[in-house]
Length: 429
Ligand code: HEC
Image (tube, rainbow, N blue to C red; front, side, top):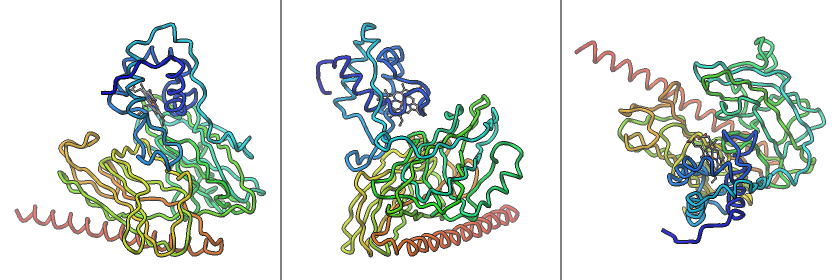
């Protein structure tokens, strides 16, 4: 217990501005705004509870100094907020909480603002949906250096979103085949992940690449935004607005490489570790890593290993929560030399002591569909040191995905034969 005098209203307002306001702002991802200290005091019960339980700000990565956008509360700051809540007087209610620093502000106005022409309404109940919207890009745009997505009035229903670059306008056919604005269903089939523009999650509504880098887009391409939404009990209108900042032609191109495993079989009442390693074929700068895992994942670790097997940890999450999914961008891109390896390690806690265990008693989790679905994937965003190596990296990515595709098929074949065996055994009994 740290014993400090309670902070002044101005100090609290600054703390709330730097650690809460990026989400707790009108139109932000959180359900209510902290515009003044009164907004905090009037909710003091629940605010105290989330602070005491370390639930807010959401626990993201532990590398606070090297990863951008991760602003945690130090223990002293947490105690000081709790202390203030206990003593807070209505007289400080009017103290304004300053706007959080907008990470995109220094880029100026966006080059393009695209808005879906009409809203699509997520039904009140039923299964999760992936709903896609198509945005033709201006022909003059050659690369994207930053984007900001607002899914529209029903944003609280959106769990995450992904982007795809459609080079040939093929997805237009899907849109034309569905009378509603946009279309429901997946968009990824047949598209290279290299055409991805990033992920959006409750913890992150934007992406800004390090200066000098860009995600290339072919002239005349369309951008497809796939919103994954969860029914909330009332209709939720989705009408995304996308702001884009284009890159100068000399920007260094980045690409995505997906590593991880689709060979998951996580038995109940066990802690399992799933690991994958990829040897980087050429010198690259690693800009960000975006883990993909769901319900029973507990820990995610990303490391870089050199030829002596020396390990440099670059991301560690000790309490993974897929709700806070995001791309973790390094403040300074990390140089990884050809021959070094990038390793990802996921720990799945499929026991009853996992606080977010959705299945009691625990059940087997596998890759597939439905409630017991898990994943162990990591999207790397990297830029080759030599622009000519871009093709090589894209091919390396395609090879990895093909290989995973085989794992996936093997997995299906194995589970199918396992089920067959179980059936036989039952019949024999
Ligand atoms: C990264 C975005 C983000 C940050 C930063 C953040 N919050 Fe939240 N907060 C949310 C979201 C989203 C919710 C809605 C609940 C959920 O999605 O888990 C929420 C919910 C809450 C709730 C309601 C919890 C409940 O059970 O009803 C409180 C209270 C809260 N936040 C306080 C804070 C405080 C205090 C801070 C800063 C110290 C903070 N939050 C920082 C995103 C954030």
